Image (cartoon, helix red, strand yellow):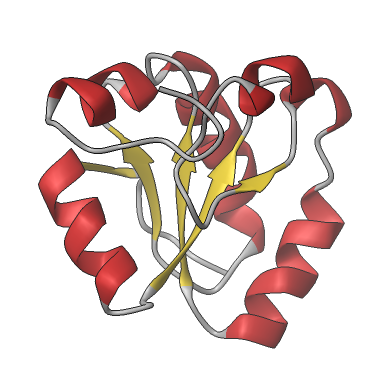
Amino acid sequence: MSDETVQFIEPHELDRLIGEEAVTIIDVREAEEFATGHIETAINIPTSNFDIPALVDLTDESDTDLVFVCAVGQRSFGAANAVLPHVDCSVSNLKGGIQSWTRAGFDLENGK
């Protein structure tokens, strides 16, 4: 499995990767938080119900890298580190989370 470290990614870089369909975004906020607004292509897997085997299966099937997000980047960093030893792909964390995404001028789906 991966011997790398979790990388930090800036909002503009994530937007570019989304446009290239080169990443799978995992939003680890709780369902209620996710419903208030999330990055368009994100999959919600809350930390309270975190499923590492499902993520391993997802990376095996989709052959994309993973980017973890949460409100400010703390929960997602922990989740990314938990998954890193189990996958054979790049694992990143959105620096500053959803807050930095919206501050950079990017929209959220089902939210502001």
